[in-house]
Amino acid sequence: MNTEWQAEIERRATLHAVLSDPGRLAVVELLSLGDHSPSELSAELGMASNLVAHHVGVLVDHGLVSRRRSEGDRRRTYLHLTANAAMVPSGWTMPRPRRVLFVCTANSARSHLAAALWHRASPITATSAGTHPATAVAAGALAAAARHDLPLPNVKPRPFNDVRRDDDLVVTVCDNAHEEMGTVADVHWSVPDPVPAADDAAFDAAFEEIARRVEDLAPRIAHA
Figure 1 (cartoon, rainbow, N blue to C red):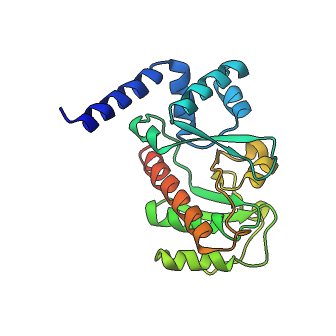
Figure 2 (cartoon, one colour):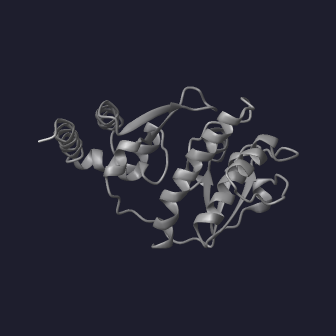
Figure 3 (cartoon, rainbow, N blue to C red):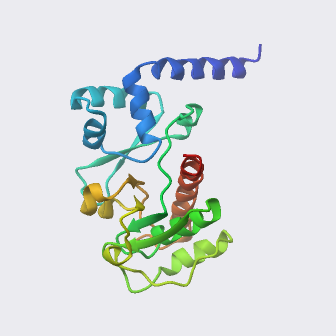
């Protein structure tokens, strides 16, 4: 038997054993839809905070979940699934909305890229807005879209309250926006802001992370 193949089988068996606990599987299922802070997980799952901390610790130790410090409230940490968690088929879907609204603070980069990527992945309409919109879309976002052959509509940043409809699925792609909006957001993706770095690598990293999340969520809504 090939040694590498055997090692991979043993690794996957260990991960399945970790996920045999209903509490840990529930955490992974919830994170498959979006990022959560530990306190948000506790509230969503109706689970004591110390038990959430235990389950999260086990999942982090086994490489299924990672932590990311909030860019807004630096005391807060967001949890998200790693590539290893792709081995876990998720049965969760979301009700089909009339439109998906992507939100970040300035509506100058991440939210525009997310809406454009959504247009490419799903027949459901998408748009974007900001909690404190900038005056223009960031040049780095325009350049990243061009590098990835992604059509980006020629629109200006717009305020969230002017764009939002009651039946939108609201997805925040910015920690500051998520923390400002609270429960108004339906899903949160903790994507680092590429604008301060102002280099191609930062914008490409944001593009790739958003693209991966869009490709995961879009079919789950379309089949709901």
